[in-house]
Length: 173
Image 1 (cartoon, rainbow, N blue to C red):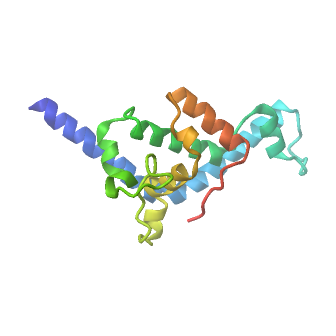
Image 2: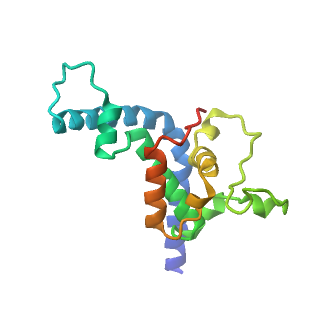
Image 3: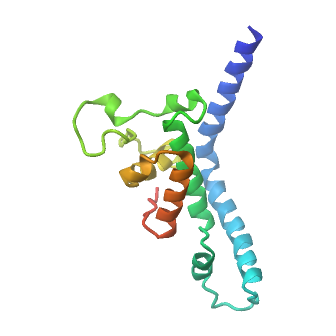
C-alpha cells in the first residue's frame, strides 16, 4: 500500500512539473539568454577574443566547435524527452499527456504513424508555450527518418545534426 501511495505521489509530482513548464516558459527564455551570454563568454575564451570586440560572430564560432546555441540545445533536450516518451524510455505516465493522430482516426495520412495530435483550437498563450504543445509541434515537423531512429543515441546524433545544419524552423507562439 505504501508503495502505491509513493508511486501516486511521484506521478502527481512529475505531472505538476510538466504542467508548470508552461508557467516557467517566459522565465526560461530569460534564463536561456543569460546562459547564452555565458556560452558566448566561453567562446571568447576558447578563441581568445576580447570582450570589446563587438564584431564577434558567435554563430560562426559555434559552428567551428560543432555546438548548438542555447535555444537549440533546449529544443534538442525537449525533442529527446519526446522521443523517450513516445518510445517507452520515460515513465509511462508521461505518455498519458500525448495522443497520436493514429489514435484519433484511421485516415491514412503521410505522417500518421509518428505524428502527435495537437488541438489547434487552443488559443491561450500559456498553452501554446507548454512543453506538450511547443515541443510536439516541433517534433511533428522533423523528418520521419529521424523520428524512427533505432535507438536513443541515433536519435540524439540525428537531431543534433538536423539542428546544427539549421534545418529546423522554430515556431513562435
